[in-house]
Image 1 (cartoon, rainbow over the protein chains, first blue to last red):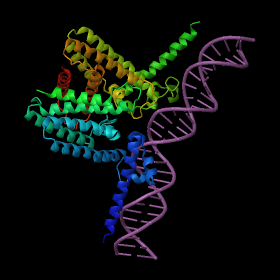
Image 2 (cartoon, chains in turn red, blue, yellow, orange):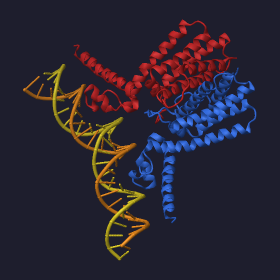
Image 3 (cartoon, each protein chain N blue to C red):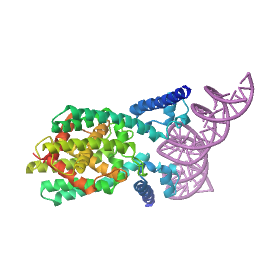
Length: 205
Length: 205
DNA sequence: GTTGCTTTCTGAACACTGTTCTGTTACGAT
DNA sequence: ATCGTAACAGAACAGTGTTCAGAAAGCAAC
């Protein structure tokens, strides 16, 4: 037959086309400032058509975000394998997280920025999943350091979540303050290395 | 004359009336979910009337936020005076900041959440001002600790900004994750005390 | 007491937003 | 050639922030 497969391919192609257009717009203008009509215009389809491929705008955003964050997870895993010293691996992982946020500011804010109307369904959103994955990586790295004696033995989950929150604070604020030229921010690299130092010292036994 | 003063008072009263209504709505429904029409309905005026008292919706939000954040500054100053030990004063100040955020989640997110469209005018927004004031308090507390020898001598500005970013991360994430019941968050108090511990240890010489 | 001026307020509109409903078009199968 | 289905689009709905011309109200002077 082959015809139904061709149609399925075409359908998938348009779906990807929508995602590509949306990604480009989100990155250059920010999620909030991109309307469904802008996306529709870019791909030269009617706005209603998009709803045949995605439930709503949120789903488009979440799909894009998930794809990008898989890159982060990959990078972190590669890092963990390539660095033998647990302490250095932890430091490198933390730095990698911050740099990833700075390289994908819109994706980062869309994922971990505060949600205007949180999902109360009890379902795990892609955002939650992204957080949990990053958290799992972090917990693993922390436990390796515990075994090596460079991080104090404490509830790994509490330690991981707290560390992640601090890391997130640094990342988000760097992103936000970079685009707010009025704020007298200290040099970026100074903040990053000081932040990493503080966190690692704070975790020591 | 006296009549012009009475009119000025009446004008000021309506302005405050708008702020009161807006505050109530913002706190219960969140900034994003409150429309100008909702505010207008609540005070039983036409939406257009509000624009005679405020430039736009943003200005209403900023005015409210500024008023609330003056409370934080006051609390922090009171704290600083009432605690003699610099280290304890710092710890209490940091804890106070987090608790303030948790008590005023909407105000906090509105002030320090990422701005959808940042102000590129170069002007210091009320948000910047709130951040700078909190930062100034923190820098002062840190320098007292430096003198006491409990915090390492380093660039106070970098140290303060980095600490603040971590503190912000903890505060914001606690706010967000509390309303996202799907996320398996560690106990709030554990995170707070662990976070404060980490920060203080990280700051030591 | 009527006129005129100023301030305060509003109804209606504009240009958007996300989303849905109904109808049309295109195309493969019978 | 007909039919059924899947893909698409136009128009509309209900909402948003904001603006603008005009109405109402209060007060001064005549």
